[in-house]
Amino acid sequence: SMISNNRFDDIKRILDEAADGGAVIEQGGAPYPHPYLDAGYYFAPTVVGRADPDSELMQRESGSMIARSCLEGATDMSA
Image 1 (cartoon, rainbow, N blue to C red):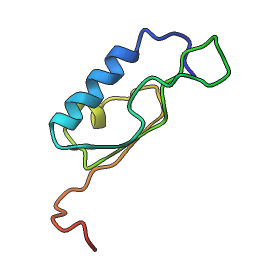
Image 2 (image 1 turned 90 degrees about the horizontal axis):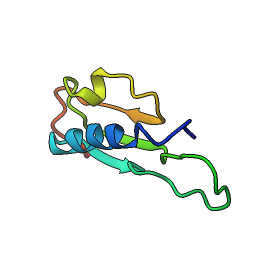
Image 3 (image 1 turned 135 degrees about the horizontal axis):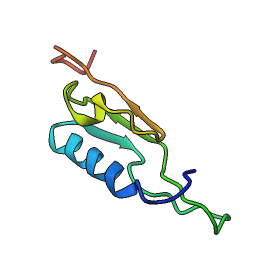
């Protein structure tokens, strides 16, 4: 949960830019409509893989529930 939704646009922009750069949003990546709490602001826990280590996503603390990983030099993901 977050104090307000004023950061949602920024978080979404960072995720979109990472995806445009080749990152894969494996899970989440969007505001979360809580099933029974009407008040509050929620962003789904997000898992991002294959992010560019130089991307803003990897270089900046987002203050949200985003798990990030990058693979430097990996070419075969089947192993």
